[in-house]
Image (cartoon, rainbow, N blue to C red; front, side, top):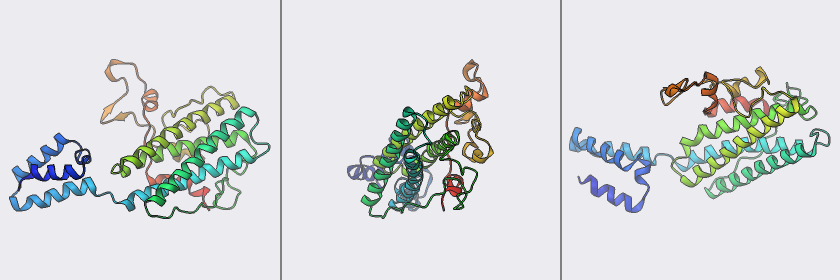
Amino acid sequence: MNIIKILEDIEKVDPEVYEKLDSRRSAMKQFANIGGKLALAAVPIALSGMFKKAYGQSTSTIVGVLQYALTLEYLEAAFYTQAVASATLLPTAAAKAAITTIRDHENAHVALLKKVIGDLGSTPVATPTFDFSAGNGSNNGPFKNVFTDYGLFLAVAQAFEDTGVRAYKGQAANLISNNDILTAALNIHSVEARHAAHIRSMRRAAAADSTIKPWITMNSTAGIGAAVQAVYNGEELTTQATVNIVNIGGFSISANAASEAFDEPLTKEAVLAIVDPFIV
């Protein structure tokens, strides 16, 4: 079996085959190991396993991720749309302009995801019914005053944006087989991060509270409390790629600073548990 010839033939059809197998050097090393360690009859089976890794992500898997992202974007778009429609919630023209811009971004994300899902041959999920009080449909949950209490509105907005950032990060690996969709998802991820920072700055100004930072410190809710603790659990990590960042390289880096320098992903299950009280 001429493995090099097989690779060359695949590369003619898919120039990105090496990226899907990690790298050309890594692929060659893996193929050399296969050829050197296995009986000839077993080589096709081993090769099948490698290519399953490279091409195993089906369109249906990607659509599932996009439908999940669309549900989160529906949530945010509806939340900001209702806020902007309120005649009394947003206290200044600057606040209304900022929330209007964020609303428009979320609506653009919704439109993009619906278009991509349709282009992939699937039907976008319908807009759920939301209960922004987090009362599972009772409209009498812990955030029942979210559209009359500006401080509470910003707190819930912060929780939504921080959840969105971690949710997109958590699904990046499931989109890696499609560069176009992965790039679009990462573009949305970065915008959600900017929203989160801006909302935190608005909370800081509204509450005149200098302890509210534009980023997440450890697993702190930044004063919101236990109702949104699940959004921040897991952010307290100070180890990245098995390296402890605290005081790394002889620099004075606290545990707080180490956690602030990195953001952690959330699993799909964790995100769905967080938003469950808001979806009827």
